[in-house]
Length: 399
Image 1 (cartoon, rainbow, N blue to C red):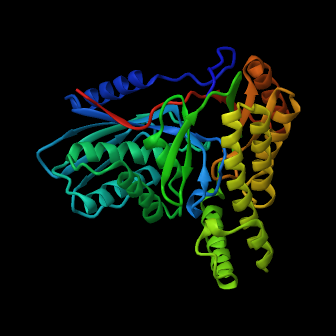
Image 2: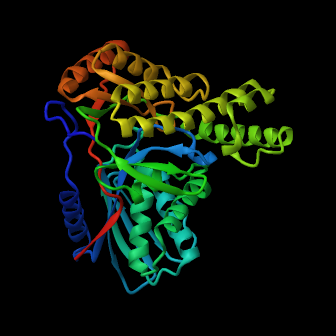
């Protein structure tokens, strides 16, 4: 991903081992005995290929050096206690008995437990402590990191041996069934399967991936957080899923050669009469092409071309998929205007969150200062700016 710049200010963060150690200490202090293991899962960035995963498309993500950790130990009853440090809350319930989650983090955890226990038996109750440093609500998938870390913890705890792909499919079902978000597998896949120093080309038609070097030849990935609450992200996400599924159904009727999303070509867009559907499918088709072109740009080490693809992706997300917002658009425009940025785009579900920019490493500090000043002047909001490193996917520390 390029080297991290020491000149750019970012939030203070712990490395994985220190974060795991801190969570273990918190568990021991809270329960008066030590956990048996700690599971962890990272957040992610997605370089290109946005809003394509739930429609059998292409994406290019990698995990980042921010994690959610879950320390756990068994007890001799069916009672479960899960303490969240970041949300300052605690769940207490009995396995097999009804429980009403009181907020979203509890829905994630309870959903994980119910779906996992539907696949494999959970042998006993347990105590768990959750903490992490994945920024919440900024588009780097803190929710997926939580699901993946907790599912890995349950898998290890139960000695169930569920394979990685099946495990992340359970994570996806948590969002579908307990959060009401019809998400694809991008976030969970990146959190589970990533390799340090690599990005993945992910093909969601056959759920396959290949690793490519993440070297960006003197450039770094700089994320700028709008700090805008993504209040529309969930509802509009589901709306886009329904719009694209409906468009596919229409196209299947009009062209019998179309069996699935990846059969749709640009010339098929005109067959759609609904203008919104036309725009949604245009984004899907062109975004897949941009992702293929990004692979070629990486292989040629052509950062100028890669940056141009990022920018084109943003304007497709803005104009055709209509999931951007004023703050995101402003940040992209200002990023390009600095002269230090090869390209940038909104990243994640949209309507807030962050933009990802390909910035010359030597100019990262100047870029940061200009963006912060411009954004503060325009919206009176302090944007948070970070450079992330690529890391390995989820794992377990045993004691």
